[in-house]
Image (spheres, rainbow, N blue to C red):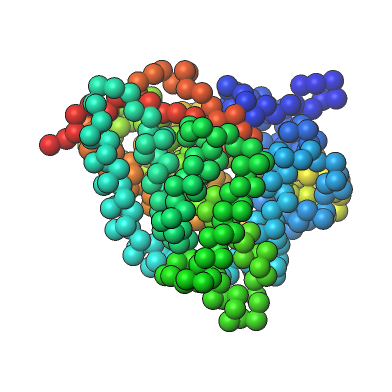
Length: 406
């Protein structure tokens, strides 16, 4: 804590959960500095739930009194200036979100499951061809390509652009490669997605880009061109990067916490329990900006003044002892959470939550069934974190696969 009683949130911390423990101990709403921005941090489950649902807290940037002083090029700036449904409220949010709901219905996801299983089986075959006694990075070789390819199929990324798109999103998802996630790289990705949208407009297909373009042209411009682009960019990036973290974190938890995998293999716990417990215990999102007070409000005894921002601390809320008991810091498949906030809550609840759950469940089941001797290649404490404010995961997840099950 600094002299002005603000915690400095360090995106490069090696101990995110230790930092969150200290934040929760400091109070439900704690003054912090994140990427140069002074904000409140909602540290506890009940506080975060109140923040996510409070009628006087808005995601609309116009309510942030210090918005013009936010440092450029940061993760916070990228998120809060997004012009998609992410930062819309009320009727505007419903207008922007409505065209996407059909893509994530249970019926459509049921039809998508065979494709997810097919992609997963192909990745398992590729893993099985690698030396079983040499380390394999499961983030790069398994957790990343599955959600990337699923969302590419759904959105409609032409084959001719996939190699370049994968090169750029490798950096965004932090799975290695020659590029770093920088504002220039994000701009290059922005330009490429714009080119893909233009090509889909000329050559429609059975995909989400085509559906959104058709809606725009047939429905009196319900989506502006800028909104169309922002929506597709949000779907592509948000539609796979957080799922990469979820699958990576689940593999790490199952391998590094004793006896958990065996609970799955003997059928004592379903793979869905592994997904939900990972979402609680090691949320794919660490911190997420930003909600702003439209007027003075009081939350858990703390006064938030009009125009002040509040940062959502998802990873912290997932280990709140007040919500999950004294063992909240433990990963335990026999006691999966009845509820958690890792997908948000209320009108902004993550649209892709059912897809992320499905992908993770299919991936984990296939992986641990195929490689019964899979083991970590390095101790958990040697894994390097992502070094980003938003994402909570590790840059790599090296394992020794062992022989494939016969």
